[in-house]
Amino acid sequence: MAKNPVLRRCIGCGESKDKQQLIRIIRTPEGTIELDATGKKNGRGAYICRSQDCLKQAMKTKGLDRSFKMAVPQEIYDRLSKELMELGT
Image 1: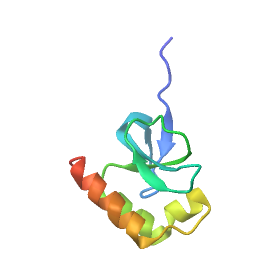
Image 2: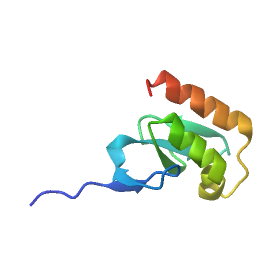
Image 3: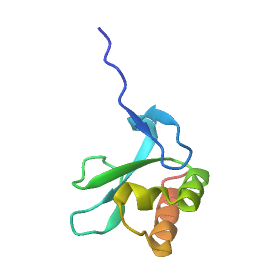
């Protein structure tokens, strides 16, 4: 019996995709927000596609703010955008 893929919803485009295709963004217990490339760090997680367009959409719709139940400053989005570029998206 084949295992079902683990699906997560992108906070940018809203599409459900296999967890492996998405990047996890976490709010750590200390309150910092960072990319979690391993997917195993401790903290509240949200998922986003590996594209700048989805990050822009998440900024516009305040997807991270809702996911983390806090206001996410613009500097965080800028840093996430830079980190996404470094991952080759």
